[in-house]
Length: 308
Image (cartoon, rainbow, N blue to C red):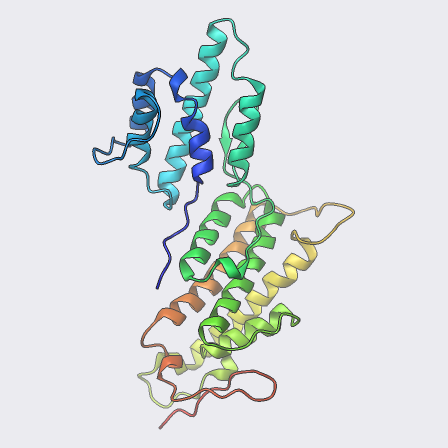
């Protein structure tokens, strides 16, 4: 049984904006949504509140909150609404949105990695305190959603992105072991876990039987070389995190990291995680064709003997 993709923007953040709609003219509500190419959903179930909040709901229900492009456009809608509310308040001799309201909005958006600045602009460039727990990622969709989140938020916070990339590799490896019904030693280091997970899916060079015929790309020497490089790359992300990423107490912040380092680490993690998840789900993957997998005393799955 699969779980639905995780929403990239929580209901808490959405409701924080919705709560302010009574002070925004109805025409502006529709205009801002339609400027970002959203239309009313005629089948939307109206929520509690007045006409303007229900109008907001009719547009918001047409957003796929698990889709990166939809969420990016919806955040632009929210930004326009908040800035309009602030201007309208000042126009009538106010001081803009109340400080308490802004604080509540900031807290709500911060939970999703979004920063609301003093100009009421939203920035989706934050991975701060992102922690991936394998218990919460029992299906591949959760890991894919977290990868998308890190891709969106990592450029301006590369140390956070590197830490999150390492956590996603670890979560994926544990998920593989869980699905293969293999034990996980919580005390072992990540390189050992990476190796065990790849062996469990016959994706470690040492677990790939020699090629017996030209029609089996999974056994090709070129695949073995790629798998060896990918194993080293995944381990490299873990080592990079140990030196530069979040998750360790530091006296000084790491220097020299930039967006390219974040993209490199996240891209490497994404490639490794997606290979593992794709292979885990593939009904024709070599690990599924194995007649049996045995575990020696060390707990490392061994490749089956492949018939000639």
